[in-house]
Image 1 (cartoon, rainbow, N blue to C red):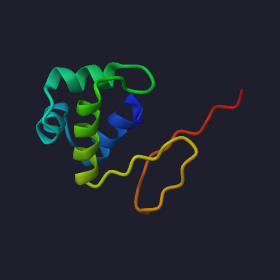
Image 2 (cartoon, rainbow, N blue to C red; image 1 turned 135 degrees about the vertical axis):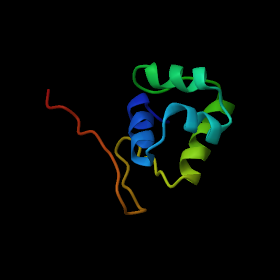
Image 3 (cartoon, rainbow, N blue to C red; image 1 turned 45 degrees about the vertical axis):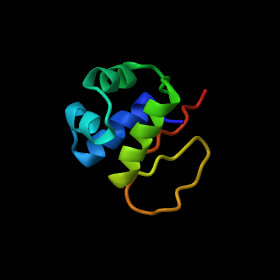
Length: 84
C-alpha cells in the first residue's frame, strides 16, 4: 500500500500542505495528520486509503511499492534498504 514516508514525500513533491491534500482527497485534516504520523504502512479504512491514492494519482504521483519498477518516468522518491 502506501507508507507514511511515501505520503509525506508525495506531498512535498507536489508542494502541498496537509490541508490541500485533505481537500483534494475529500478526507479530514485530522485523518491526513494521523496517516502521516503513523509508522510504516498507513492503516485506515479502505475507502479513505482509496480516496488518498486517487487524489495523489490525479495530481501526478506514482506510488512505487517495495521491489517494484517505475514505469512512468519522471521524478520520484525511493528509500534504499539499509545494509544490515
